[in-house]
Amino acid sequence: MDTTLQLIDQLIAEHKVLCEKTRSLEKAANDATLLSNLKQARDTFVPGDISQSEHLKKLDDMLKAIDTWLEKHFNREETALLPAVKKYGDEKLVTSLDSLLFEHSDLRDRMLHSRKRVDELLG
Image (cartoon, rainbow, N blue to C red; front, side, top):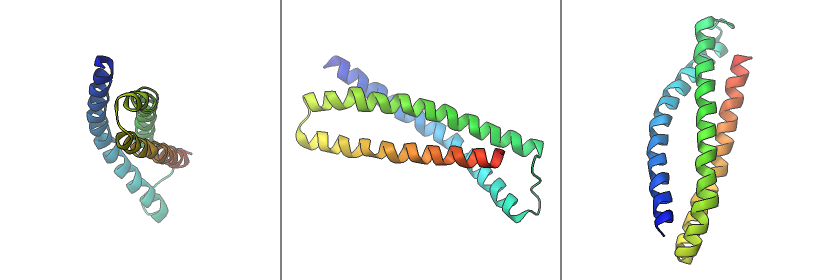
């Protein structure tokens, strides 16, 4: 039971770290959206501009780091937390956790889509 409580504490701490990381990612994504809009307008966006490419590369690096981190976090929730909840929790708690874990696929899809968009802009 102590191991399960430690896992839950670790996952809560990871959620706090994720909130901090997503704030940085949100700013970078807003910058990338602005760059994309500028590209569509073709008024001021010059393909190959060094500073814009550097910002997109930074965004790409951030997305890769967060994606790697998320996969490790999701793996712990799906392979360690879920069995513990099944062992110690009731059916309602298991159903609730299953419902939350279902969101992982949506988040994975969003990360993949974001990385594809950045790749398009970099290309």
